[in-house]
Image (cartoon, rainbow, N blue to C red):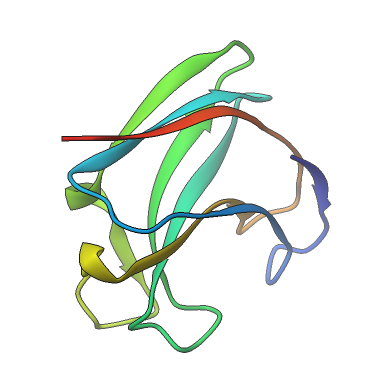
Length: 112
């Protein structure tokens, strides 16, 4: 994904993939520009576009595997607990500041 994030209060870049079912976490093979991104999870319980569960990671300028346990995801603008049985969508986001987004995703895996 390459994108220009233009606004600190609302700039948004994303790449989405739909997955159903999950267990204890996900691994991402990522390559980036040493910026911080987040993996955004959405479930069928969330009905507002700004609601999600997030976990940040840094995308190094070399390929590496980032391991993100589901227990470390933080609710964003929701009080609803994360229910993995209702997982609907995962997306890599760059948000919260103006910066040049440049992140590549080489693989996605779930782990137990």
